[in-house]
Image 1 (cartoon, one colour):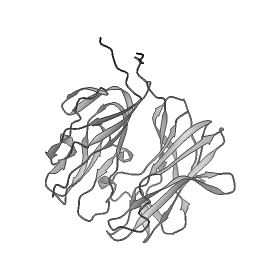
Image 2: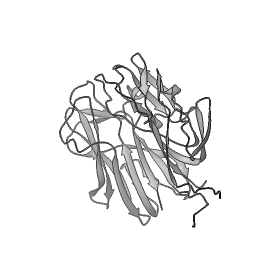
Image 3: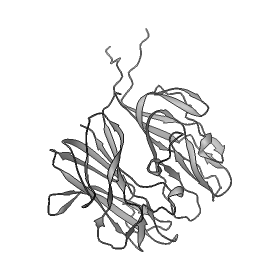
Image 4: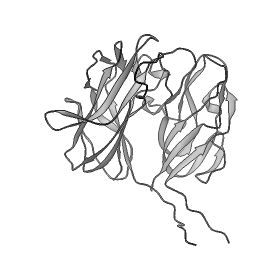
Length: 133
Length: 165
C-alpha cells in the first residue's frame, strides 16, 4: 500500500553543518517533505511560506566573527535580516531570526565582521508557515 | 485507517510597521515608538488594511484576530550596560493598556530580570476600531532605536502585525 502522507501547516527544516566564513555556504538540504530540491545553495519549498530562519553555530573558537544574513538572496530591506553575534563584546549580542515570505530558502550573507570561519551546525533551521496561496 | 491526503495550509496577512529611524530613548518610563506612514505588506490573504496614524504613533486594526510580534533594534554608543524594553499597548482614546509580553534587547553586559528577553508578543481582537501602538523605555544608559549608524551590522527592528483570522 502506498499513500501520500499529509503535510501539516507548520514545517521545520534543517541545514547540513558546514564550516565557512559566511552564511552563504549554509544549505538546507536535509531531506524533509516540506522541501524538494536544492541547487546552488537554494532550496525549493513545496508551498509559498512564511519563513523564520535561525542559523546556529557551535563553540567554534572563532571569537571575532559575526554574520548578518537574509533568508533568501535578493533581499535588501534591513527589517528582514537575521543576526549571529560573535563571542567578542560588541553592540549586538543577541541572535535574531531572518524573515521572509517565499517559496525558496537560501541563506545569504548580508554583512560580516571579524575574521575566520564559523562552524555552522545542523541546528540551523527554518520554521515555516505554509500558506494557501 | 483514515488519513487526510490534502495538504493543510494556513491563511495569514502579515504586515511590518515602518519605524522612524534614530529615535532617542532617554527615559526609564515608557514613551511612544514613533511610526512612519505606510507599512510593508509581506502577504495579504485577508485583504486587510491597517490605518497608520503617524502623528499619534498608533495603528487602527481592521476587524479580526491578530498576533503581534515586535523586535526593536536597539543600540548604545558603547559595549557597556544598557538595554531597551518595549511592549504593545491598546489605546481606548484616553489611556494605554499593555497587551502581551514585554520584549527586550540587551547590550553586551547582562542586566537584571533575566526572565525578560526577546520579542514583545501579544494577541488582540479587533471589531474594526481597535487601536494599538508600541512603547519603549531604556533600562540603564540612554539608547537609540532604529539606529542607522550600525544597522548594517544588526538589521533593523521588525514590528509585525499578523492577522490570523
